[in-house]
Length: 229
Image (cartoon, rainbow, N blue to C red; front, side, top):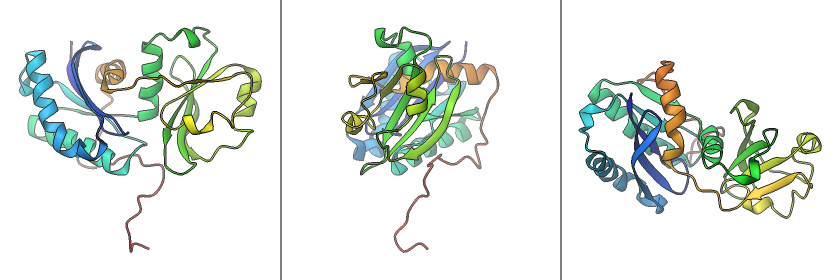
């Protein structure tokens, strides 16, 4: 029954939770994206206290590793690495988009009760661009995570075959663009570190651990630094 700290600072709302055997014991969130760095360590202490565990009781740390906010991804991974090194416990990296898909399934949404409905989580990448992937309800990847500026024919081949649910903060700006009858938008989708619990537990049991020294955020797009060629 592994006890896992889950960290997600990949998108606008940051969150941390402690889970045991896939069940969320305590969770905290922060909707001020610019405060993630100063907030995260206090939040970790708070969830540990609420869960009535010592930090040294953790069996692993899981982090949502992208795609997402460049700064947010670095904050989350740096925090996770620091804890894993100091406690000598495994590091688990999870795709933010896959975690989002898992969260929709965990919420048991009535809109996706047809097993053939595909899931398209989307993360805002600024301007008209978004990060996206497509999963079936077994969380098998149908389209690999990518950056895209959709046009009216976006995912048209999949939409001709069946229903496709769009959700996440990257899909809202496309509601008037993607009008196929099989497309629908989950605009009230709720997402946080609690959605990581099932995937993190599965990775722990399969010993799917990351290299603590060399792991990097999954940006999809190159990180831009002013003056860098």
